[in-house]
Length: 194
Image (cartoon, rainbow, N blue to C red; front, side, top):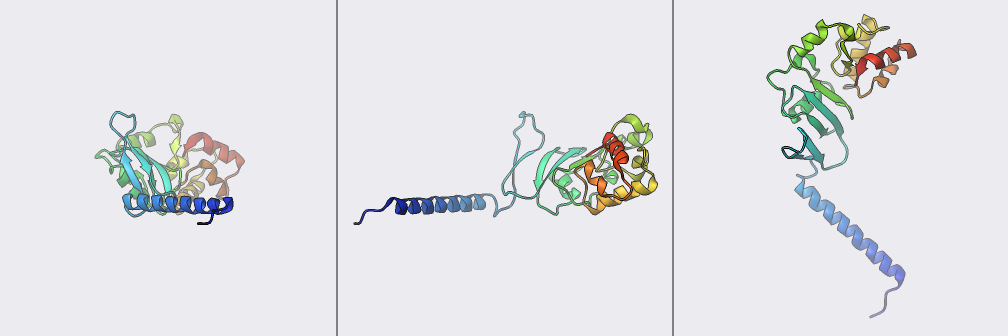
């Protein structure tokens, strides 16, 4: 039997490693439900109320908080809607004010989905505008109109832009709207949270 050269051994080793990686990936794909996103519940008492996400790369990662069964950070397929995120988080609680959330909006990577409780949404609307930051994901035209430099038309443009783009993950995305200049962007940064 002829002896193998160093280059032949290196090639055989590379092929063996590639086959091992392909095999491991195939086994992991079968165990994970054919490439679906795998989610394992965080153990009780570990400090997390949500899910630890693993599985296939890609998709969008969103933080679901407020009046939902299991607030937490979730990975969902690209193209998912706010409704999908709320369902993944255990659904809305009985105290949820779902009318304050656009469940049909597309999710954006890094977005926070806030499901307010009944009364909390009313309290926000009834309080002074300086009570605290307004959620960019749920802000109404009326709430946006309370921000310096934003009138009813620009507030409607912001809500329309948010709905058209399936939500916003950053206040900085609003600089794409006509009529919002640097001074208005500063006011928005002070009064809005993603």
